[in-house]
Length: 97
Image (cartoon, rainbow, N blue to C red):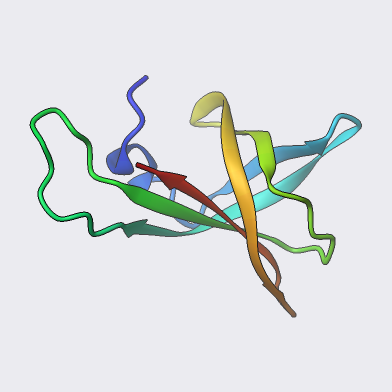
């Protein structure tokens, strides 16, 4: 499966299951897909982009590679970095370059 921005565009505002620890999964929602401006792309290079996810809890997990899945594709490892928290939950970002 080729991973690019278009892979996730139909999944915006959808829920995923994420295994922050080996004992249980948590629901995480994809809340934003954003292009990263990098100037001119070389032939064969894909557009850099980022994904912003949000959990409903207040536990901040460290940056790490976590497995996510939903009913539209199999489990995928993503390197997620916590980027903020507020009354709505904790946000995590994955960057694809």
